[in-house]
Image (tube, rainbow, N blue to C red; front, side, top):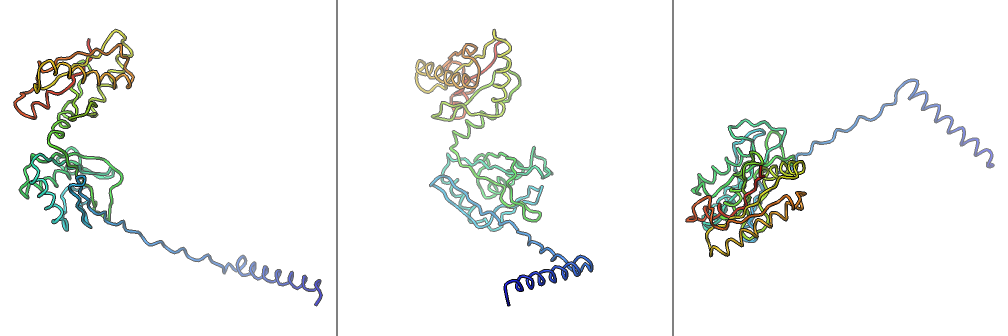
Length: 296
């Protein structure tokens, strides 16, 4: 068979195949796309529980806290050993405190009497620990809105974070959170963690500074006054210098924030104007502060 015949035979085969396909698929409509194969639904894995306090405490469990979606009643099944260890750890360290943070999703509905579902969940875990004999004063509860919660069917798995903190640091953080913004002409106190020159930032004190920055930009003759205070530990002269340095450290932060240094006035009162008794650690912490206010 010569090459010319081979070409014609190949073309004939192609023509027959194409004609057959057209007749079967386009005229008689007997060709069908294969039915799509449904993908199997993947169920998220339950995140394991990890509770750590640096190298001093490292606990884990293969399961986790769970709550009904939009619910706050906690299920602790399978966590007894880990939670008992947390309780023992806290009982052995009287100066240790635990912040319990409850997580919640924007798609959930708050059915509790608490401000949000996260606080309700944190309070439920706190109640569990208190029921095990740990004093309620050990705990502080917070909440956090997140889109990273694991939902399996109608349950939330996880949703609780543990943060261990020293008692003094917790007191300082709580003092900062208790300061609520009213307006820039009413003094607001800034607090510092022990050993830190940076004040503890909160939503309220940041709002104060944003409002003050805007006002001062529009009123060049007005000033923001920073007044440093201390507790009564040490001698009065040293405390006066300490309060001055503390106020100046805040001034430096505010200048970076965009408030002109020429509109910031720094004063120091040392230990002379306590807002609480210096007879207790909590009172001393309340006195270590910088007050901020815009002069009218």
